[in-house]
Image 1 (cartoon, rainbow, N blue to C red):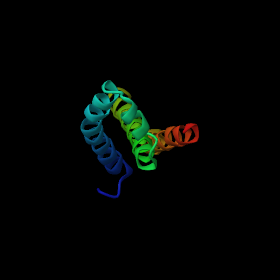
Image 2: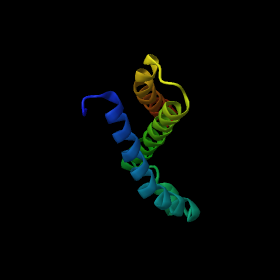
Image 3: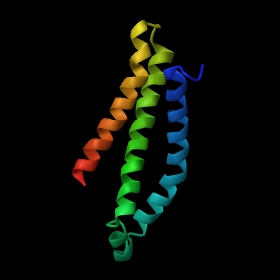
Image 4: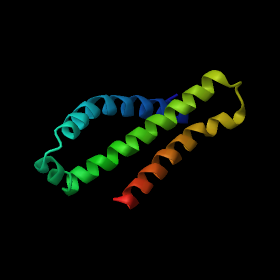
Length: 102
């Protein structure tokens, strides 16, 4: 069962949800205290990497959520097996677009 793509898609969906729940309050707090020191801090490479990771996590969570919605509300078809791959491709594509925009 752990070899099935849907299992790994559900793991990524849950992990990205936990990561977002842990990161977003700190991120919003930093934004609300947007002092010059905080803004200069965001130029560090490690912070930029963290920003990229959170964008990929957001995209993975969105893609996984869309996959779950499709599974719940649409009749089962063979093409739905590829929804996990589509969700992963969406996440990586958004991450690449974000990385190119940095």
